[in-house]
Amino acid sequence: MLVSLVIPVYNEIPTLAEILRRCTAVDFPKELVLVDDCSKDGSREFLRQLAEQGLDILGGTPKNRNEIRVLFQEQNQGKGAALRRGFAEATGDIILVQDADLEYDPKDIPRVIQPILDGDADVVFGSRFIGSPRRVLYYWHTVLNNTLTMLSNMTSGLNLTDMETCYKAFRTEVLRSVTVEEDRFGFEPEITAKVARGNWRVFEVPISYHGRTYEEGKKIGWKDGVRALYAIAKYSLKR
View 1 (tube, rainbow, N blue to C red):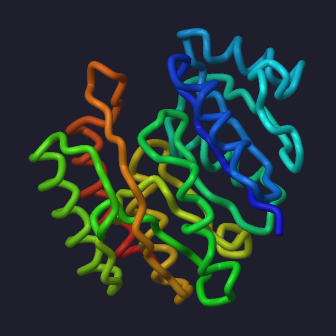
View 2 (view 1 turned 120 degrees about the vertical axis):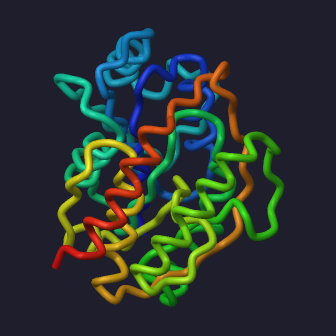
């Protein structure tokens, strides 16, 4: 089965080449769909070069069974909008969200997609809180994450431990059945609510997590937490 990794990119030049090396090194047929959200730090130029020259610019990267597609947003719209574009362009049987930083390790992807390959799941969430190594960072981020996950569970009827995780894998049929409306980080509670409403089979697996500080480039902020609360309320009521 072909797996599409949809990778939104916004000002990730310090990690972009390395995350692509790690993604392409994972041994299964895959399509990398990169969506640049009007980066201003050189990421956009790097991706243009990648589109023209292919994986050769990474140096020493496995070339077998990897396809690269690069898309460019005309204006900065946010992660959700980039994912919406990437989902529409992806051609794989399974679609997985991959961030362009190094917080999530592509070595975990086979574990994330395995329940779908086994025929047990339609959607898989990778959880940072059920048994794998993770970097210890911000206490209040964890409190907010747990609160948002609890509120999402209360309205969706699911019992997830990490609703806000980046690693979400879907049978392509699932994403074709929903319309992503959120432009920014409200995507996470939105897609969770819509997956729950669709009665899709949801699994959760442990993943490692190497979180970064704001000095290292972390982008999510308190306004995104407020939007997530709004999204939980909005999509739990919307039918």
